[in-house]
Length: 369
Ligand code: GLA
Image (cartoon, rainbow, N blue to C red; front, side, top):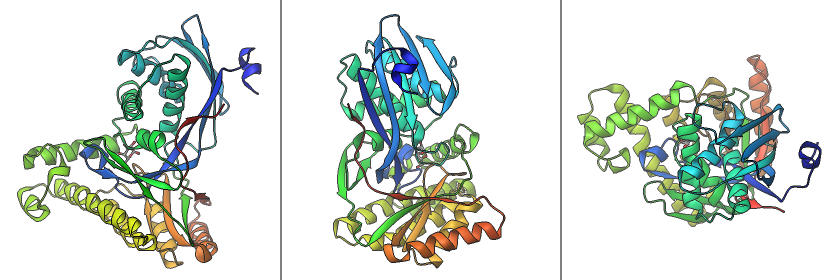
């Protein structure tokens, strides 16, 4: 099925936005901290054309049911279409005149794998609508508009990382993003002799569920008790931990503050060309997400443990947690052992076989035709 079959005409263009893997800095974005994602080669493509009846007609090659909306408001659209309709809404809320469009969506990112298929969809649609209606928005601002679509239209209180990664990443680099100032820098990610193996644990996550929102609320509560604007501002962790009585808030704070430090350390190592040494930071981040932030899941813990045992330099869960993927920084000559070890460990436990993707730091969102 192509655009012409769906809509009886040719598209005016095709846009593509990638998914992401976050190298390190997890649950730091909404704490005004630092993240270090890179774009995947996998992503979402949209072919689109304007229409003059004001209707937004959405079709997806991954779903049988087309969705038609006009001037949709939060709460009126659900499922995958909400991410796209939400972007049209958020652009209008930001004062941009967006008319109707016919949109055909295709994705080679599995949903629920923690690789930001939703942000990729938002960003591809955002670029398409901006181009079609000659709206000029700087990309950091467009990331905020896409985030607003997800926060206020879809109802998922995500931070700014995924949309920024999709829109701002460049090939061969990770993106160091200061989530408070919005400033970013491209950090070379030279993987010579190493690979970044994504292990899709096949435990699907659903971030609209309460766990993510509860983590975010706990962080805000901790910052309030500590009298800082956000956990990013905690300078003396030991002192902060003495002030917090609630053991849950202590654990959440410990993770956020130490993961922010790990981002800085990772950037230092990457800039020094010591990529393999980032591995130890990845594993430390995972243990912190498992024990302090409590967002990892059994399949992730086993994947990390087995990958490291089989020769990965380090591994961690990526994304919001409660399901999704693990990334393992692996010497190329150990990749086979890592795949085998994780696959066998899953089989021993009767779990569905994991899927592997070689993550290649790739170009960000763009018009492709
Ligand atoms: C999800 C959110 C991001 C970020 C991560 C955790 O991917 O969309 O904003 O908070 O979880 O780092």
